Amino acid sequence: MVAEYESDVLVVGTGGAGLRAAIEAHERGASVVVVSKAPAGMNNATIVAGGGFRAAIMGLTPEEHYEDTIRVGNGLNDRELVEVFAREGGERVLELERFGVEMRVRRGGISVGETTGIMGWGMTRPMVEHLRGEGVEIVENAVVTELLSSGGTVVGAVGYDVHEDRPVLFGSRAVVLATGGAGALYRRTDCPLRTTGDGYSLAYRAGAALRDMEFVQFFPVALAEPGSPPFLISGPLSEEGRILNRLGEEIPEKHGVRERPLVLKSRGPLSVAITREIRAGNGVDGAVLLDATGAFRAHAGEEWLTSERVERLRRLGADERPLRVAPICHFNMGGVVADVDGSTGVPGLYAAGEVVGGVHGANRHGGNALTDITVFGARAGAVAAQYSRERRAVPVDDLAREELARYELLRRSGGKTSPGEVMSRLRDLMWEKAGIVRDERGLREALRGISELRSSLGEVGASDPREMLVALECPMALEAAEMIVRAALERRESRGAHFRSDHPEQEEAWHRIVILERGAGGEMAVSTRPV
Figure (cartoon, rainbow, N blue to C red):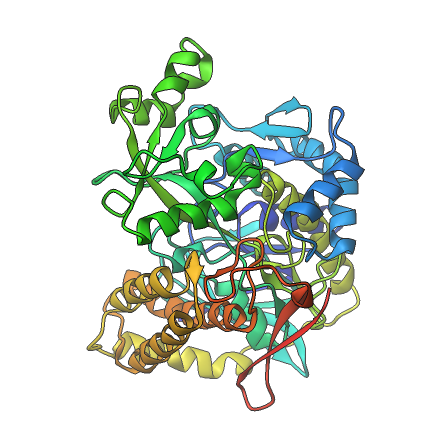
């Protein structure tokens, strides 16, 4: 049996962008349905974020925020987006308090969540509770696999409810995509495993263009101790600690990485430097060393040393010896081309948050992600609500027929290949061939590997709802991975978070953005245009 929902506005995703869009659309009188691939507010990039927002508050001016964002983005940012982002950021992040978010205000932004816990939950939990208190319907544990269009206009979506083990149809007058990024396409990542690039694929198939997909941000200093889950190391431990190769050489100094704080302003260059040291044989078990013993001594007794993450490092001996660290996939700067109101150019389709490209350019300044989702989530929700008032509902049953048939085939197929195996092979491929240090040979091998994995999808089946979820993610993940690789091949220079060892210099001729669109024959078309 197929479950069906009708609304003025459908919001796909319950990270910060989706929740803020849903609140805004509801407050403007639209009926709203929110769909989440996981329990609402969970398993998204917002919840694992550090809880820090950079915004024009307490002495940081909008002009300063604008300039910092453009500089770190190597000038490839959409300046209209950044102007709105910097101008509205302070007001937007402070108004989160109205939805139950507790915050600590400081110069240049706010922080949310308990310092000893999962800080992003301090944003998503109260917003989910606020929506539920307002009676907004939230459909959890359902993966959207196709946006439904009629006459070129998006009129809903179709997906699969993994918890209830049944298809689900959404009819709506407007859709807001807030699906986050694609960090889980890489073997080492701090992003939840459900961030597989769904939104990039959904928007692309619906007719939207994408930009900047080559720019994948890697956080340079993350735990890489055998047997311990990776997580980011920031603050005084990474800033004051010594990042060393096995020869005892200080890596930032050796490679001329000087802009500090390192993990806020030099994420790309430091990630490249560490990776090159490892590839040159100067690493330790595929990692380098962080000696933070001096930082522990210098800050003895300070409250931040009691945080959960620091305590985990102390239990591993970080206050007594160097620990292994290595870069980790953290954020996607690229995404759907959208204007300041989240309009994608496809009627009925809006987008906000990490699924959108342009705000951050070639690299993202630390603290800007949560402000981005707050500002543009609100804007997309407002305009989607307004648009929905001008549209009639369109029946979507017939539009979903092919996708529903695909679900049934997957459910009935025994499958020679596990969908988890496909996803695992993709993560290894992207890490090895399209990761931090790239070249043409490796990228072309990545394309061949993606093609081979796509060919294997015909042998994939789903014996239970959990496998069904991964099986439905696989085609979207492969499409998102192809976008990253094709854009990286096109940009024959190094800039921001994109490093080509065969084109190691930044080139003025490449002060351009790479655009991906679906060609008339269904092929992925790549072009460039001036910023």
